[in-house]
Length: 188
Image 1 (cartoon, one colour):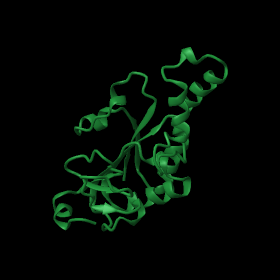
Image 2 (cartoon, one colour):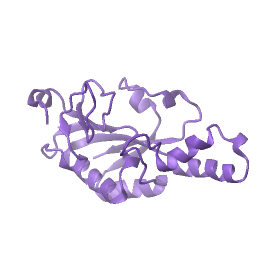
Image 3 (tube, rainbow, N blue to C red):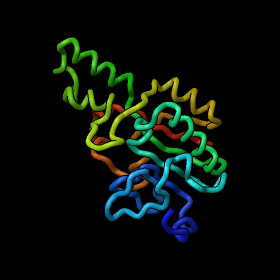
């Protein structure tokens, strides 16, 4: 944890902030980045915040990097530190669509998909550019929604990239009409 004054100013947290931390949020990551001041350099479930203390938590291109057990462990901690009616916004590859792309590749129908074979494979196993850049879990939407309900979230919505764009957060894929991600809003 770097500076306590930022914790007083912000009641929002970005998980896995990486090289592009979002202004107006506290920042967490397990990897240090040059010129990025982290408030929490630890695992998600180790973030030392009080219960019911945050109005919003965001995680972009992060949750698929967790093993299933750690995914659940992280969700439980996220739920714990969110305030009542607090919001967890995150995305995951839509594994149903990516599986269809992979099937078309195996059938010699790659011309029917909007991504390269390498991109499709990286969606399943990560780009593997550095340690931690591997994907360890994938979810079908119905299973993910059921799991979020089991954790305790009262409302789960399948959104669009607009939930991030409206907060000034942008990624190149948000503007790609072929984007195949689930954008989830889970409300405590």
